[in-house]
Image (tube, rainbow, N blue to C red; front, side, top):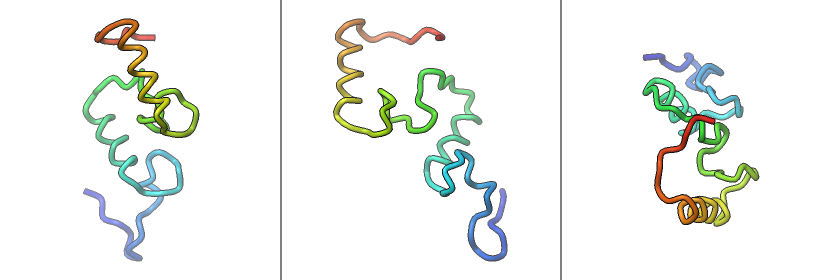
Length: 79
């Protein structure tokens, strides 16, 4: 494991998503990369921003519901 620098603040190498903050999202990015899970269909900036409008709202939920109603439950093909 990597320990933070002696100053107690995390180094830039902990900011794996490049947003200048060390958050749970950094851990999520590392965990997904290590797991080998295909995230092709997932927004790399925010997995909850389904419609990629830079905010997480009811519209993201509605997009999933509408897709499911139109096509049913299924695995997504590779784009």
